[in-house]
Length: 181
Image 1: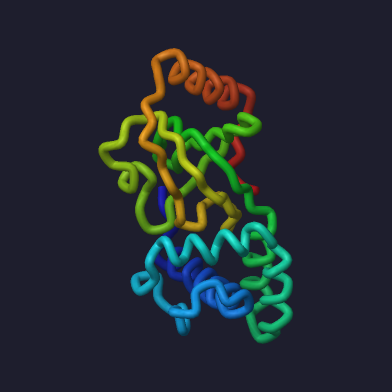
Image 2: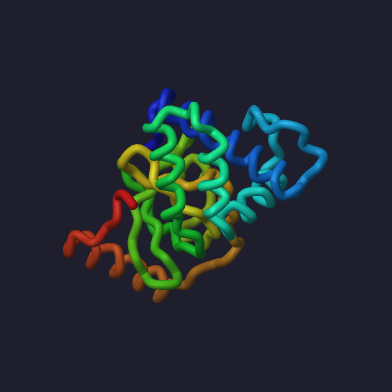
């Protein structure tokens, strides 16, 4: 599952100015004059800036304080990103409504939607389960990532695959799959 084209556009409309603010405030990458288009932003540069933001989500408060004209509903979306979940996850399977991410830290299960492309498309050809570093954020009632996901070239053995499958199945049966944050 992915966001609708309008919602994906809204995400980038909110996300890029926040990255730009973070970059300018903390002088992370002086080569970047103004971040306005995702297509013009190298993922490594975006990741460096996003890492600073996710390490200190009070940056969001400073950003919103300086953007009083931002509509209240947009402020609420951005404020919600303070509830981000950063860590390592096992992508266990792809479903129609999103992909299943299992937290390595606490084994919580999340159903995560893609922004423009599905996770299956993004990880095309990579065998599941797959170990990734990601930041999960709430967006309009679903969970997405900030778009800056790193995967590991790691082969997961049969017993571990079975273990992750069992975690997912137990969470599904018990209604413990997080679909929003």
